Length: 331
Image 1: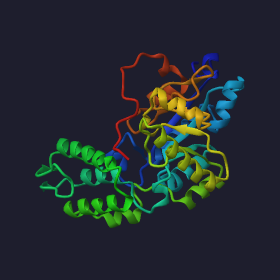
Image 2: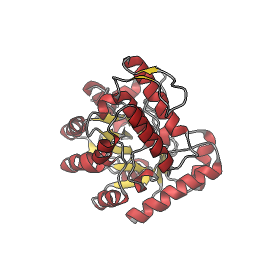
Image 3: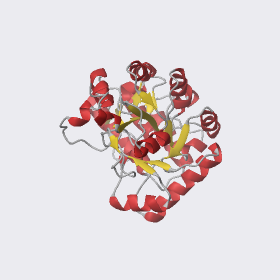
């Protein structure tokens, strides 16, 4: 009843995803990765219940024109992991569903794993290790056999790798190799399987040719409160995306869910048409186009919770305050 109401017809639900697990990534970080089967189940639920899946740009245009179909949904994926090309795109196409990929382009141009999440994953996988870590400062002794300590160390070391903004990709990768060697982790095998990798330029070009929309997520997944950096991050990101796709890149997703008042004013000057957050909710025509709510679906969202959000019921219920984005390892 809620999904067929006039209230719901005048609103758009933007669904947000990150990665599709190629191996066991969903066990390491269920807020960041879901299984292919879960994505397939979600799309089946939407189609079976008669929801209309629209491309993001079209959905926003129709929202403001008052011509949305009943139960309209737009689907987005953050970051541009290679698993989108390998797993998500075939599933979406099987359901005749479109999606927008918010691509961060720096590691898309390099055949290297993203360092922050890779370091966090390596530590999480090293459940037999106890001793000193020389490749990361502050770990004279760590007992990764303890699950709670291992989880804490995984998150902290992931943040450490991401936080080294002055290091080049090759330097961070050398640090990763040192960490993997200390923990007796097979980094080479992980790279061959391309876990924690973004799509290459050619893979992005291929999915764009299939009709998937590629949009802005900053060049290096970074949005500090410095206008010159923001401008460079978005312009570098846009230049690369438009060169790959031949289409305008005017829709933006806040990396890490980070936003602040000045950023919105800078985005206006950069001709950004929309900005999606990780704040849960449905979009109405009166919402600030640069602060659009979005429901981030992940492995811990039950089927009932998913149905409640797509129908609109969940947005009417009181919720406890939460962080703006599910806790995921730093990119």
